[in-house]
Image 1 (cartoon, rainbow, N blue to C red):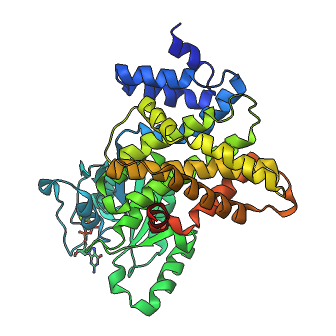
Image 2: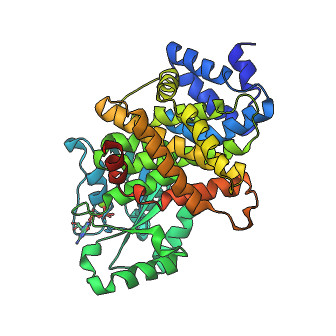
Image 3: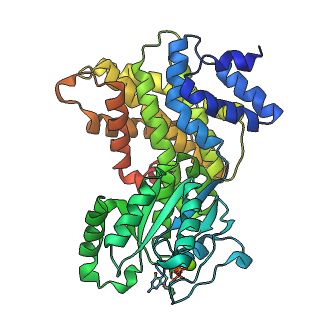
Length: 415
Ligand SMILES: Nc1nc2c(ncn2[C@@H]2O[C@H](COP(=O)(O)OP(=O)(O)OP(=O)(O)O)[C@@H](O)[C@H]2O)c(=O)[nH]1
Ligand SMILES: [Mg+2]
């Protein structure tokens, strides 16, 4: 049995396949680094399992493959127009036309981050219509992700509902977009969206209004794709520089909430080793978003250089002296904060090759810790479960102004 097989047996069965897949795509150097990262895990099997479980989404994200995004919907709703927004190569552009039934065959093209597939209208009648619908549905069945396009003016009626039901039965991750929103008078917009949501059994915020003709809200659709499919976050970052920070923030939120959960596990000796693992994987993902490819080993070296583990411990000592807050809450808040600050520091590093000063790192960590403690103050100070804690941290971070823009961090770091 090789060392890798030996380690693999320690993983929970549901992540084994993922880890194996990662292993197969790694080159020899990466294999060595990955192995050293895994060997560096604490030896207690329960902890190993916990850590791997907590970080699987990120691991997958860091080593994702290209996926198939399939555009489906009734005829003439603007599927091909939307497809054309995504294709990279002009020669792959689809024919668009005012008459229903323009697209009769599935077509696919490279969309940089994923392969995108355009399909004929899936609601047509007659024998030709049936065949086109079959085409569309077979593409949908092969998809990793579905973009369901409907027409804002046409609305969601019985045919659309039936199609939606058929497609959701495939159990694929999906996003619903309502196209041609430019034809809806502004005052009716909310009502149109709510109605569509109601008829599909969704919440209004699960529907993205778009204008495929001019690309309005394309970014929102892509973010929705990314949010449901963690593997795409990194890939998306490469294509859309302006969304980089938002993508980075999603990665940071995930890593920070994992860090908080890890901080709840009593780890007498190795205290912050697991944090280094989580943070390193986060740094690998962030590097990807900035078009750098670094090994987990290099990432963990970088994490060590920033010395946030030490900083976190000092801060913990300072804050616990003040009293008043339970230790678990403090360590969770500090673990998350150092992860957030590490994420931001990595961004600055990949952007400008500069290392933030120790003072800046300290100030940012303190600021982030008080923000989290402020928003986390638990009623009755009962220790939260791991799951609840992860959710609360994720929620605090998602609703922070940083989710929109990093300017507050830039200001503080550059003061
Ligand atoms: N006003 C408006 N028109 C749009 C928009 N998107 C597409 N259209 C128009 O809608 C018509 C149909 O667009 P297509 O992209 O061919 O639609 P489709 O869903 O691929 O249609 P089929 O191939 O027939 O299934 C064309 O005349 C487009 O110019 C939009 O956002 N706003
Ligand atoms: Mg078409």
